[in-house]
Image 1 (cartoon, one colour):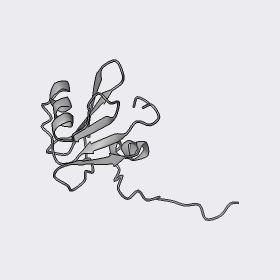
Image 2 (cartoon, helix red, strand yellow):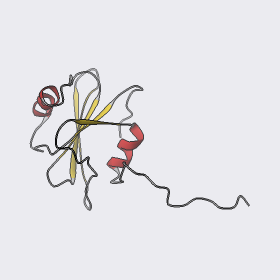
Image 3 (cartoon, rainbow, N blue to C red):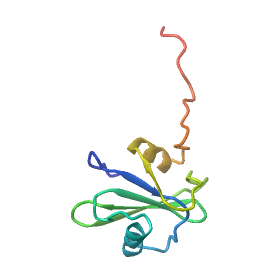
Image 4 (cartoon, helix red, strand yellow):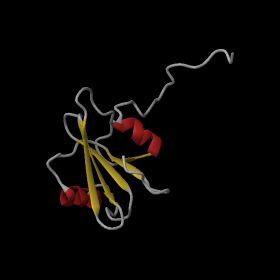
Length: 115
């Protein structure tokens, strides 16, 4: 993943998005539905109907970047809301892109003894 500058906000677009949309379609969606400026430097994440693909839209200062990821098995965990947006931390985004439930991360193992 490309390292995002400090202070970059990450927004999940709640609900489903038509994954046929490209740069212009997703930027228009950010502007009209999410009511954000797509050129502000924030990262916007969209999920398709099947839930196995996400697209990320980010303005890096020179132009729009469009990244896509498809899971071969499983689905991306998404908020239940049908509209609006949810803010994530960069750690939560990393978990989301790995297919981990970012809403309730749990440690799978904790050490019991130091020696």
